[in-house]
Image (cartoon, rainbow over all chains, first blue to last red; front, side, top):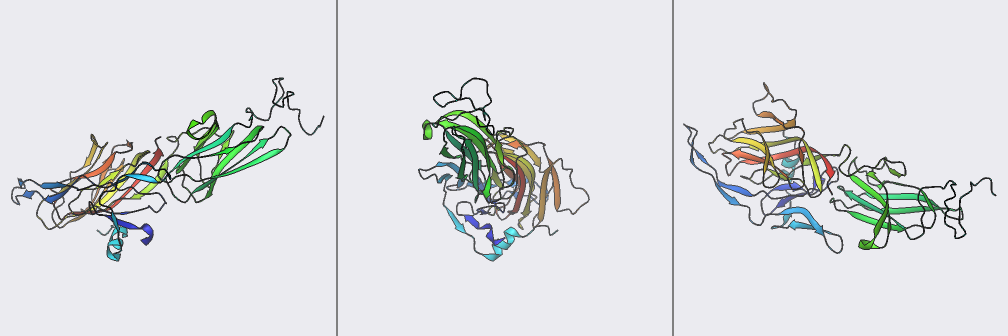
Length: 102
Length: 284
């Protein structure tokens, strides 16, 4: 499955394939926010003693097609901070490995 | 009179008359019309070939052949070809390169006059989905719009988000999805807190439904969450394999999102193995 061509979004650190196995393209859209500090929960009562702290994803990427340029090449909605190719075999294996290990 | 060729009503100018004789087709091309093929597709590496025949006034049959490459990003692609004077006998379109799945490429055939954006449609010949083995044939095919039919089944491997980030999958532009299944894995960090993971959908602003969210996943856990329409919750199985039901049917427009919402999600928690099955149509 190495031909899935995994990339990592620099804006949100998400990892995804450029194209699906059936030849369709995949358009990544960054989520809105990340957890900086999770909620602090009292182990005895289970109650939240300090709320979670979130940070918005800086320069979110949106690969959906906004239109076509003069050469009819797709223009994406927002490039964000760009992407990097994933070359680490461990990350690739983790992405493509079946998760049914219970 | 040539007995092998049926009489075709013709005026002195060469165009058919209305004398009640049979004509080879219901349309007559004056030489000013062009055939326009419009397509929309979601897969790359596909080339369509259109072939057809036109019976010229001198009884010769002109063969038309036109390659056309659909875009792979659900944007419209068009190709036009001039047609000779005469009667169109029929056209057929199928994928000649690539093997698009059923519902991946939709085609519209029209007769137009004029060029580019100034072209005026004078007749719609037909429309439908095509594959390498299933053509669009006009005349004869029942017209099929881009939101008709069984749709295109797609198995999608989604984004594995960064640590401390919820899953968020967006319906692409010009697509309409029916969600069939959705699954993911949540690996919780050692930070003590009970997480509760739910799947929800919104249109970008308004929440549409909320499923699951009842199971508790403690720290240092690895849980698999599966959602499906008409799905009964799994009972008696492994405690870290969870099944929850989705509303049925669910049709989501372009821009709608499928997301997780996790109570007590921690910065070191990691979602992964996002895989889902949808039916897709083109919403033009």
